[in-house]
Length: 367
Image 1 (cartoon, rainbow, N blue to C red):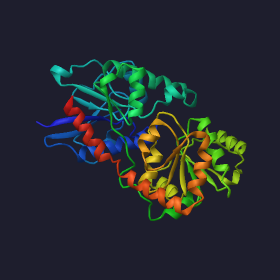
Image 2 (image 1 turned 90 degrees about the vertical axis):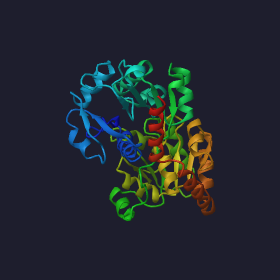
Image 3 (image 1 turned 60 degrees about the horizontal axis):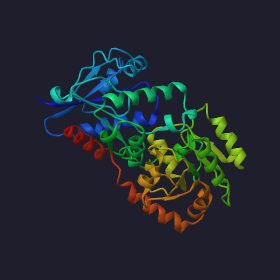
Image 4 (image 1 turned 90 degrees about the horizontal axis):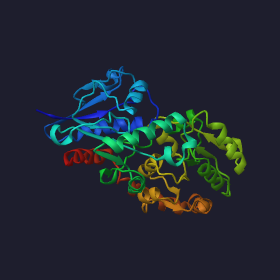
């Protein structure tokens, strides 16, 4: 009889976090591709998502929860998980049926993942509902998760100090989308998005005004005043971005505010940029930084434990107050850009969803 790893896919149709929704599908595909002999992968999905689950290549089947995503999430936050059952459950986020189970006698396991600590470090940048939901699920994970996967040792250290998870924390980083590369129609995609070539791309500050202000000020300090595209900004937050840009001295005509777009469009934008600027120091997996590395795009980042761990020598990280100097060093010198591009591309090879999936399988085998 095959051993089934049951992956929770809660954002197949109702996307509330685009990066995690992409990660769910990447992890599911990679788990299927790397499944050990005698093992398969099935999905646990909210009511109404069965057809989407069937479209994920290689899944051996799916379990339909009795509720749609919103009601299912509320139910799981309270520890009510009817109709789900046990077995080996893996969640690419904290959204999981975190209830009492018997790992020793019944071989039931529940492993969840946490990609950022924004709900604890920057709650004013999120909705109250999202903050409350994340905090409630982490409390349930403290009680019932057999392991919690985080993408960096920096986050593991932070959670080790503030929670009772201790030895249940495991570090498995994420990756850029499989095959992430500049598309052949990159010029056309940038034109459709209204983003020119040669911009500074600013990312990772979608909920952090202080980081956003620091990044925009660094861009404004450049001699030739290049155009800047600020990535992953919601429509509701766009006016605040424009306000901060004006305060930094960036003309509205030089500012491009971009919401979350699909991977080929992101690749097109990043491939046309001269540098990626990552000014946030929050404990969060830097998705755009890892994508920049995959493309060989030079990266300048604020010094933080997460950036040091992810970049190593693949980019330049400095205190937030020195971002302008670092940006000038890279953006205004062709030799420097070429040097940091090589470093970025080399470091980018360290991240893959295949490696993530193999380590997930090893974790469940260990448990």
